[in-house]
Image: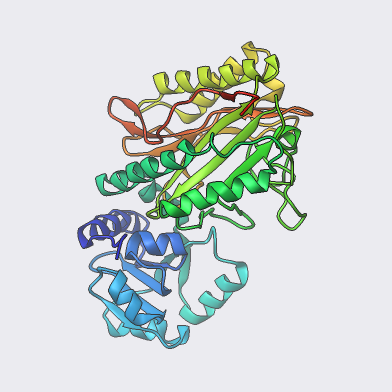
Length: 397
């Protein structure tokens, strides 16, 4: 089975979290969110992973036990028939559980109350510490990210053959999704948080690409229904309009985020200028992005460049712009680091983030670039592949 996480990798991860548990004087952490379960256990079977402050974890599985044992390299994987028996089982295996860490950024208040009642212990938010551990990618994870970048580039390589006048945006999206599936795309983009949703990515055609959405993203799109108000809307491809394709690759559990812009025939000069500025901003961040660099400073430098180009009001959204130009990626699309206004965080070796300077023009559409980068000792290494240029296809195609 592809995608099995080696025991040594899992051990390195839980031992990093254990350092945080010791610092916070916690007896352990109870992990239940799917991305975190996969990170620390190598499986998302229905269950709970207990990571003690010292010693090996215990994976208590409700469904399916046999699959969990096949997927996870952990030694201690046991059945759990009811959450009421979780605390007695921890005690039976010799674990202390007086002060426990939980992922309170994703657990509902009702579930928190339930866990308080079941465990009868002091419960502490451990979500920030988990995110910090996950933010530094190991060589194993970087290898998976590179492979994802390679496969996603193959999808983008086929796009120019798909774009035709008269084609609707959802038809183009469907063809892209088909290409991605043939490369092994898992069909899921994990996006942490309440009401955070995404399906493969966004295909935005013409003026529809400038329509804002409720999601915390620079671009939105009208969507096909108020039920899912983003991305494709039935817009028809025509000459001289931007086709912005923000597509997330997920072939091995690890995400690569990437955006390219296409058109049939030349774009209006205002959009071509904005696209060029997006490349200049990317070049700026690549030059300045090194271990120890403050994320807020990077954002401010990018914003100033957009302002100097006379494009400040179009930068990262129109009228209601998002306050970031980059977001961490890994198992989820919104990880640490965030390259954003006021975020006092420094880049560290091993961090991975998507950089997406973009511009929105009501009535015209959206343009910009996005690539995924790894922070190395010498600077930023690009993990997404393929040329960056604006692809202007001949009108006779």
